Image (cartoon, rainbow, N blue to C red):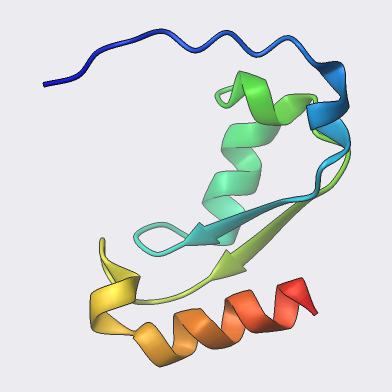
Length: 76
């Protein structure tokens, strides 16, 4: 097992758009967690997009085509 601590110091990271693909919970749940401060790193992000995918824990195995379409749409 590998263990380590990553220290992120560059504040420019908050300007990078974030996409949270929600496979086992809804986008509404994730947005509520963000508003409640339960995802501290994401509270500073300038742009967060939430996308639902009803796939279970491993969407790359259970819904690879749908996941690829979501990624493709968001990356332009």
